Image (cartoon, rainbow, N blue to C red; front, side):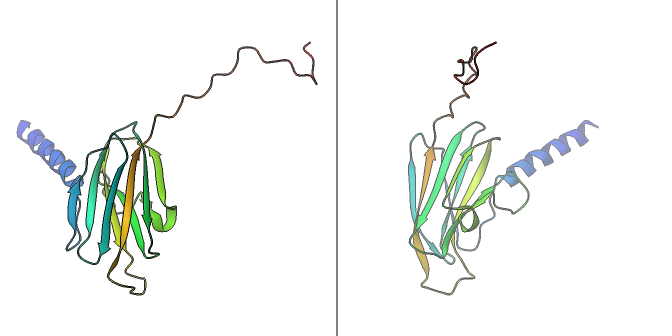
Amino acid sequence: MKGLAATVGLCLLASAAFAQSPELQPGERLEKLQFPAATMELKGWTKFGNGRVYTLPVKAGQHVKISFSTKSKFAFLSIFNLATPDDEAIFGTDEDGESYNITVKDSTTWLLRPYYSKVSPRRGLGAPYSILVEPQAAAPPPAAPADKQSPSPLFPPR
């Protein structure tokens, strides 16, 4: 019975490690980032088969804004949560706008994948891009309601 429990434990550890390893497209190069203390700018060039992708570890409670900019209307950024088994992006500039501003709920690792749209007419081999990773200050706590309300000039106190 102990052997079975150890085997199940090792399988769970292996699956957790596997979930954190991104599946790269042919020619992609992985660059592992650390969560920055100040704004970090990543510059690159999207190319078919020679692009860079980035892993970014994030912790629960961190506030972060990720912005993508490019002069090309065919270049985009997708962000994936490596802890989830599906291939669905949690954010994509093609549908969600140019920036992703969030308070992280669970500690995980994100995959940032800039890409040149393959469905677009070919307009060169790729496009330059810039990604800003900006740690944000913690959101201020909601204001507590006042103990006494100020009297209204229209409705005097009873």
